Length: 435
Image (tube, rainbow, N blue to C red):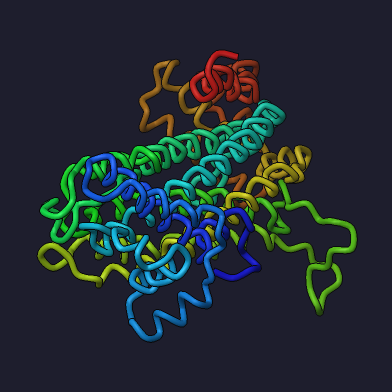
């Protein structure tokens, strides 16, 4: 996590100040519940809330931890310094460190998910706007990177919208799955703490009680969360790669917005490079980098170990911060993407009429020619376009075997671009709903 690829709101979720504030709230709400159950005096629970507006001293906590070698104990010691040792003697009653650490981590992941979902909404809005703007902007579709048949730029944006809409659903599901807390004590048996304490704390923090924890919340939840982020990262790269291809000099169907004063190369003043898309490709790799470690964290020894801890201290902030930045960058890129419809048409017509070969093939079969023979007739004329730069329609009209079946007018009918866009409205209705 570096400043260059970070945005303040997401970074704040992972700050030490935020972490200690959540730890404090967990402990304070737990004291309230314990007091309500008659386990601790109400006066002691009330005393904990005296630190409600106190700014915890991170440096002091670090100083204590340097001696105790235990972060939760260091925090509890600092809290006792603030509210008094006698008043703090019932703090953490019946709890274990993981009750605080795991519940806090999930609170942070939920908050991060909320920001990511807001990012997703912004991206979806940009993709939808561009889809309708270029709904009928015809461009060539490509398979294997080679000209296939006409499509529209609007369908390209709509395809990415649908993919990101699925990712939003995945994020929502991941958020729901990670929104659990656990205050079940050592090895998760509630031997020293009433389950009602867990229920109260979770309610106050917007979480659901973990149905069964050991001494930790099961890590399959976290694996699913980071896997969902990884899929979003791959979808970001999918869009970025399409833009990179479109900006290639020999294609130039679209390009990233190039601002006044921007420079593309230290050596070549003419350069306008797809740097944002390339950057997004790299950021997607960083997001996906968290997936395998999160999957490996699922396996822990017996009721707990801390092999997952060092991993999560890294991937929690790094992955969410990076994805937040990437979604914001992609939204701006889509919003300002410069589209060149004339270049799209020019590219489509580079091999004159060749993209209509399937229509001619089907027309021949409809006239009674076998598919095998139809394919041979069309292909031999298509190869002249590839190899000699011929005009496809002209070649077909000059082929006696073709004209024996299709009239010139019928051949020309198969070169209508409108044929390829006649169901665009249907696809848009499927993606965006009736409009």
